[in-house]
Figure 1: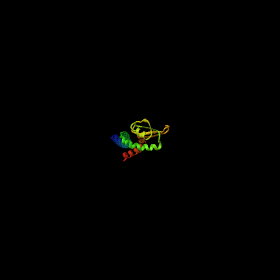
Figure 2 (figure 1 turned 90 degrees about the vertical axis):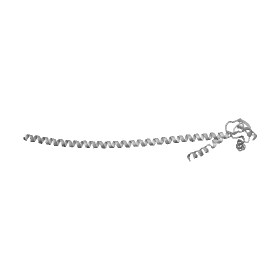
Figure 3 (figure 1 turned 120 degrees about the horizontal axis):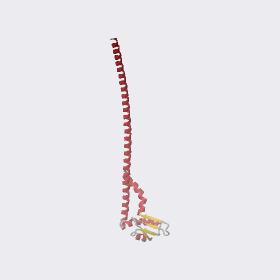
Length: 184
């Protein structure tokens, strides 16, 4: 029986050693799992931060792109409206009655006579008689909305009082005023 006691004692110690090794292994396994879980949490948090950062960047980019597109479209509409406005002004000037044209041309003609009292008058066919009555030679016929040009006798000076030219001169002011309308 002495051998049996020794064997049982060895088996008991072996069992205790086995239990201790299993506890240590379990403890090590738990430490590894905890570390892995912590690392996984850190990776998830980093991925979430990166994703949020990318989403914010995409949102800012999309917002910026859409704001740019809205501004571009608005500017196109403003340009189209101002071009249409300009065309309607020229059409209205072109369609003036004879009396209305004369009311506009006489003051311009008086100013031209001060600057260039003699020369050739170039104008629309229907306006040339008014200019020849004022003492100018008949020049060539112009097309366009109206107004006239006076060319000096030697051809070195040309006064341009065509409606298109006068509108062009005032157009920057008109555009500033229309911009104020759009902005306000």
